[in-house]
Image (cartoon, rainbow, N blue to C red; front, side, top):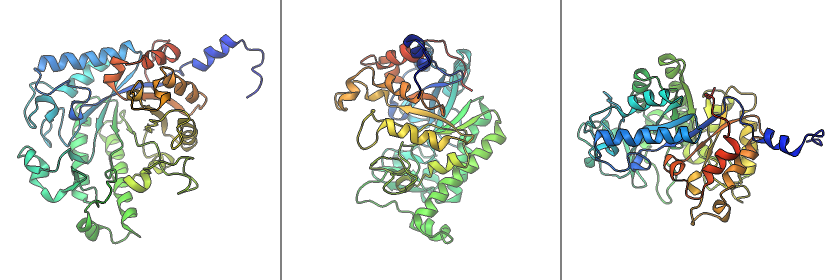
Length: 395
């Protein structure tokens, strides 16, 4: 607003591109199915370590200050856990000791580089297939087959069982107790994304535990709410300095469904489809940060980045919950994506737009492989336009 008060164009541009002190500049480092790291299963410990340090060095080169490292991709662990087997993505064999401690190394080496290390856990996903026999014999999902629901070609722990909720917290908290992680981070998988013509079979759990709720959806949402609240309390107890952040799918509810929703026509609504009341967690200040995955271009009809940023800013306003924006770097230069994503400046425009909303405290890029490869130079543009100053630690 206003006429700029005689400010020169150059100084106005400088101000627009100023990175607020303490803003988060992050990247996700995904391990599920070897997406970013290790580049393939079965590398030597030395080769795995060298690749991991390469990703941390890339984060520094891109002037980032945080790496969100996926340490529990499929109910298995990237650290020596008493609760769960070693992750399959390391050696190719679930339960096989890789000969080193990836999470311990990541925390130490990130901190040595001035980077925050956020430990990213997936609470309920067990496997990207439905054959329990393919899991290592000691896997909790085989020891407790009643905990597991097959759905949409995958296996999930049942969020409706109190014993599952306690177990997945214990499994995650083990890492928080052992390592100086800067945050616990969850992504967008709560109840699974809907698959047409299939139902998530939690009839028995609902019969046992759902009596006081108006309907199954309310019971499911409360199961996820409890997981969030209980985990938040246990993180504060185990490591008071560690933050708790969640990165949900970018649409809570569409305005056509709920007047409090965003001006979107999302095919998925987290409240209704994933039973994740992401808006409530922010408004009730149950979590330290929210990082909605706003993986759409400016002007995208069904879910416009330019409409979602102000919506999330208004949700976060006046709460103690910080807002970071998840950015779809992986779409930049992908020929299958809309024209906007062929423009190397699209993501830089996102940061410029978000800078007009003081609630936005930073951005996180998906994901590490693209931060390094930078197919059409979109990340380089972000760095040149917005990250010219060396980073300060996020606060």
